[in-house]
Image (tube, rainbow, N blue to C red; front, side):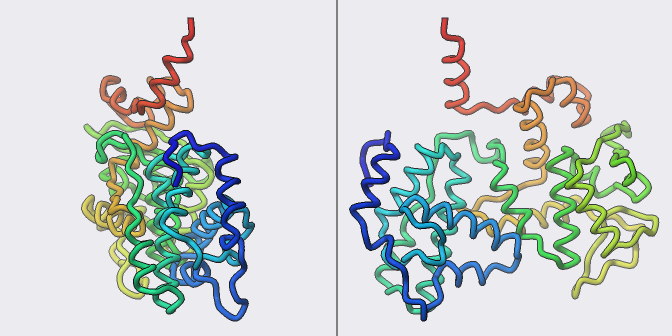
Length: 328
């Protein structure tokens, strides 16, 4: 890996051309380690997301598709080059970079399990650490979109997967508290006009527009799993995908917490997504997209605008860019 932190695209190209082994195509008689890794993922959405990440990785070295890339020639220094490229050229944030590192580790593990990689080589590659950025404390660091997408992609087509995708999507896009989510009833959701009547703290009522993609997920849950019978919008899914008969008994806030913790197991560096992080994601992104703080206050159901102000998270890079932009 180059010690120069300001690595350029030309430097990346120079590394590629000096490493011909990285461009070799594996024996067609053997299944690519990357394909073995993707086959081990339960959700087709996860396979699609991680497959796209692997394709992005091999393009750094001049290849086009992960299935034709010689993964067995990768060394720890090559992983360093990948991380540097993602950080400096692509300017990705730490948690997104670590999704790439996690995908690499998955490929190396698949190669090792299938005796395509020696124990010594595997240990060296596995020892590559996740990228640590100078960001906010982990419990205050806003979730990045790619990370959240990776969590949603763990939700498969099973009844539980369909329900969880709807819940996560609703919380992240509409900023609902977990207690607000578990207390929603079918009658509070108007699928025809795409709005949700939410009862918040102090029994204060607010009407939230529901984005198209969120509506699609909620409608799928209602149409194919839960049915439209009156009762709580989200209910328990028991073993073998059977929906709890008692639709008048809500999920608990702890159930939402546990669900997100389980869905986070696929994330790198022991990262865990908590319910309030989804609400922070919504508030932070509304503000970053230029919406007035008063509007964000109404969406989130805050009584005091001072509470909304804590969602204005800035990184060192963002502060520098803002100050440099004054330029007088």
